[in-house]
Structures are given as structure tokens and as C-alpha cells.
Amino acid sequence: MKPSPNCLPELPALLAFGAHPDDIEFGCGGVIARATRSGCSAHFVVCSRGEAGSHGSPAQRTAEAEKSAALLGATVEFIELDGDAHLEARAAHAIKLAGILRRVRPDIALAPSLAGNQHPDHRRLGQLARDASRLARYAGVPELRASPPHAISQLLFYAVTPEAEPADLARVLIDVSPPEIVAAWTAAMEAHGSQTAARSYVELQLTRARLNGLRAGLGHAMALFPSDPCVHDSLAQLGRGARHF
Ligand SMILES: [Zn+2]
Image (cartoon, protein in one colour):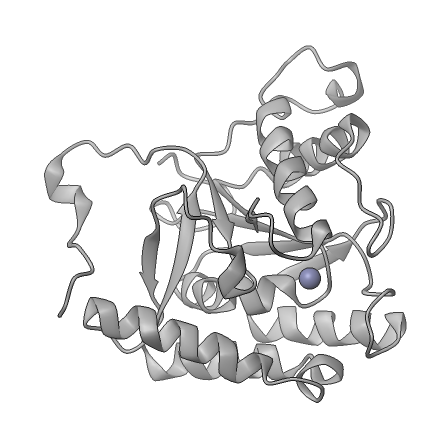
């Protein structure tokens, strides 16, 4: 992976897209915590203020997301697309996201999975992020000519809920076991108090990570789903498989 100017030479810079103010933290917050504490940069792009949710005002949810991103060592920006619960997969949105990829120039992008059985904004944002990753590479898109093309190394999908885990993609497990990582991730999730007061979201995510961890002989692990096959220079880079029982 090529070095990024945003972080240490061997570490990838991350950009995570979220449809709602808490998606990134619940879907891949442990991975972010582990990365930033290793010296990576991470930037969040949140595409609504959760205004269609059952709990919390847009202002409250914005403040929660800002606090949560800070706890994870990430920066965050909010963008306007179609609004919460109204997101459509449109070329103009993909181009807008491609422009952000060209500005931030991450190595790795994270986005919600394309699985059907979840909030429709998640699925559509995943689609838009995949399209944006492609358009960011193309030199001839007129709206993007202000900044040079940028090719990310990987687009990784995260699953906000168990139902959103794509059955058709292989998973990679990221070890988030160190206690300080679990603590930072937990604090970031708990920062979304308007949501965690209503349902056991934190317990759900920690339990999912614990199950992944147990399957891999680890404490906690989070699953990510590469949009494209991972390329390795040799078998030695593959790491081990997750079968532990
Ligand atoms: Zn959401």
C-alpha cells in the first residue's frame, strides 16, 4: 500500500462514510480506534443528522457524533444529500462523495454494506460509496476536474447490524482486543446517548465483536467485508484463518 501524507509511512489513512450520526461508531468503531491509536488518520463523512430517527434532535445527534469522533481520534464533517430516510442512489451524490475522496485522499474507505435487510440509507450509501470510489479515479468527470484523480487501495464495507453482514462477500476480522481499544470504542458508542438510552446497541456490538473474537481465538474482533478481492504479494502476508474450535 502506498504511503499517505496523512499518516506514518506504513499505515493507511482512513475515510469512513456514515448515513447517520452513529453508524460508523457502531459498525466499525473498534477498527477506527485501533487504527488511530496506531498513528493512522481517520476522517468521518456523515450524510445526515439523524433527523428521521425516533430519538434525539438533529442538534443533539450532531453533538454526539462530534464527541464520539473525537473519542476515536477522528475528524468528522456533515454533508447534505437527501436527508435522513430519503437518501437516493444518484450520480450527483456519487460525484459529490468522489470529490470528498479526492480532497481527503484516503488509502482505505469504509462504508455501510449493500445488504438489503437494513435501513435503506445504509444500503444506498454503500452503493454511492462504491460508485464514488470508482469515479474518484476517472480523470474526465467534469465536476471533479478541480482536484486530481485519486484511487483508494480498498473499499471495505461494515455492517451496522448482524442482518447487514453480506452473505456474498468474504470477511476479514480485525483484532480489537486490547482493553484500551475496547474502552475507546465503548466510550464512542456511549457518546450517542440519545440512541443507547433507547436500546442495547452497545451490548449488541460488543457481543458481535466478542463472538467474532471467540471464533478467532481473540478477545474481540470486528468483521469488515472487502468490496474487491484482497491482493497479497505472497502467502506469508495472508495471516491466519479464524477457525479456533
Ligand atoms: Zn444508520
